[in-house]
Length: 249
Ligand code: PXP
Image (cartoon, rainbow, N blue to C red; front, top):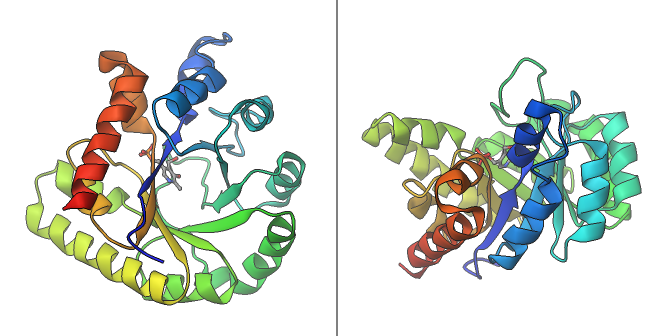
C-alpha cells in the first residue's frame, strides 16, 4: 500500500483569511481551489474552525459543489461539525484538535486519551462514505489508537520538524524526521493510509515527500503566501515538481 504516486492536497484556508481581513467577497476561496485543481492539485483541504476565522460554512458548500477533485474537510470532533459534515458529505474528513487561542493547529489529536468517544464519533461519518483521518503526532500510542478506532487514515503532524528545520537545528530536525519515518512505517503496517502536513515549504518538503509510506501531503500557508510572489498556479507546480523529484529519489 506504499510508494504510490504522492498526492498534493492544497489547503486554501488562508485565501479566506485574506478575504475576511477586509470583510469583502474576495479573494474567493473557490476560485483559488479551481486554480489549484488546474495547476495539478489532487485534492482541496479546508478547515472549518469553530470560530469561523477563515473558512465559513458557505465556503464548504461552494467548494463541495464547485470542485472536481476530492474535498478534505478539516474540523474538530464536535457535534456541530459532525452535523455540517453529514450535510456536506465530503470525500474525506480530517479530525484535528482545536483551541480558540491558538494561531494554527499546534499539536496532534489525543486519540488514545479519547478513544471511546472518537470511535463513536467516527461511525456516522464513515457510514456516510467519508474517509476519516486523524491528525496526530508520531507517538506510537496515537497511531495504535487510530487503527483501533477504525480510522482509514492518519495525517502525521510535520509542524515540529518544520520549525526545527527553519531554526537551523539540523540534528534535531533529522531526529524528528526519523520519528516521522518510524511512525509512517508503523501506521502503514497497521493498515492505515499515511498523510503528512503542516509547515511544509519548498525548502523542507523533500525528506517528507521521500517517506515511502506517505501517500498525501497537505500544504497551505506557504503556498498561499508564495502565491503573492509567483502566482498560485506556479507555486503549486513548483511544489509538485519538488515532491515528485524527492519521491523519485
Ligand atoms: N494538515 C492539517 C491537519 C492542518 O491542520 C493544516 C493547517 O491547517 C495543514 C495540514 C496545512 O498546514 P500549513 O498551512 O502549515 O501548510
